[in-house]
Each structure stands twice: as C-alpha cells, then as structure tokens.
Length: 252
Image 1 (tube, rainbow, N blue to C red):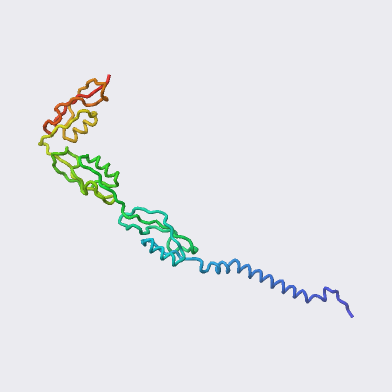
Image 2 (image 1 turned 90 degrees about the horizontal axis):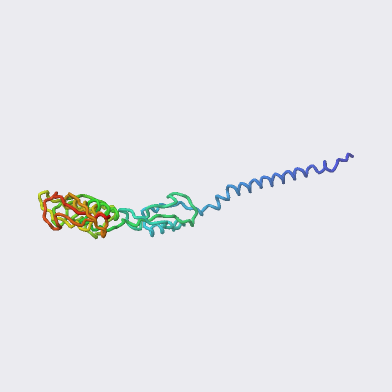
C-alpha cells in the first residue's frame, strides 16, 4: 500500500480555505461599496431640502414657507428701495433651487421702503446754493420758472414746490420759482457795510448792480478788505446796473 505525505491527503481542505478566502474577499468589497456609495445616499435621504424662492415676500410669509421645508430665516440687512414696500424681501442666499441640509437658515435683505427727506428752506438763496442744499437732502432741482417779486433780489429762489418742510421721497426733483426783475425797474441798494469785498461782489450781482470804483483806507480795527463806506447809501433807489462805489479797509 502506497503511503502519501500528509499535505497530499489534506489537499481537499485547500478548496475550503480558498472558498472561505473568496467569501471574505467579496464580503469586504461589498462592505466597502456600501460604505462608499450606498450609505451616503441612505443617510442623506430626507435630510436635505431644495431652497424655495422667498423674493418679494414679507418676512412672515417667507418664514412660513421655509418652515415647511425645514429651513430657517436670517435678516442680514435692510435697505431703502424706491417704490418697494417696507418689509419685502429683495435678496436671498442661497439662491432658489439650491440644495442644502435641513436646519440651515436662508439669509435675506429686506426693503425699508422709500427713503423720505424734507425740503430745505430755499427762499432767498441763489440757484447754486439751492442746488447744494437740495443735494444735502438727497433731492435735486427740477423745473425752473421765473417770477417778479420786489421783496427779493434777482436770481434768487422765491418759493419751491413742494414747499419748505414737506416730507418727500429722496431723489425727488423740486420745482423752483426764481426772481427775475425787468431791466427798467428800480433797485433798492442793499447794505454793503461790514461785508468783505468778495461778499460785496456777490451781493451786488444778486441785486443786479455792479461794483465800480474801490478806494482803500487804513483801518487796523477791521479785517482787511472790509467795506466801510458805500455810494449810493443803503436804501437808495437806483436803476439796475448802477455801479456802487466802495471804500475798503486795509492794514498798515
């Protein structure tokens, strides 16, 4: 009788070992695939939401819609938007249709409505000054009409529409009525005394007058270029375009 070595006689066990090896090998691959692909899909299922659009909605309306989606709301800021009611959402992030995890908050910017401002007192100021004052109030000059009013110098605002103190939307154009005096009319000479020479020139222009001869006189008690005498005197009636003679201070 032939006697075989032990390892020959135990060869059938190798098949079992191989089967076991392949079983565990494929099991390992299966677990790996489950962990890599299947499980993320399963675990994310039901925990994500598609972002709805909340633009042009009020905060209360937006909160109600987002709540149904498992999402929250956070107001980032408020801005003045012309012709848009206060409290309406004008911007959101993330954008609509974006997929995010439930529980996150949608950030929004809300309209504060139309910004209001007040019309400044423009009566008696020049067009240039009116433009500056209106700009400071977020307003601008609109149509200009001309009127004649003996109580005001030429080329100054007599009244505005809307009038002083009115609450109006920012950016509105303000209609101005500006004084225009006929060249044949008499002008009342204003008081130049105590004004510096630069302001004297501006005052003469506003009243349709001109600065003529200027004489200088030493006066250390006054600032240089201060008007100390004028001809004609304040209150005199003269024709438009009349030249005003001035005496102006200088220092030694």
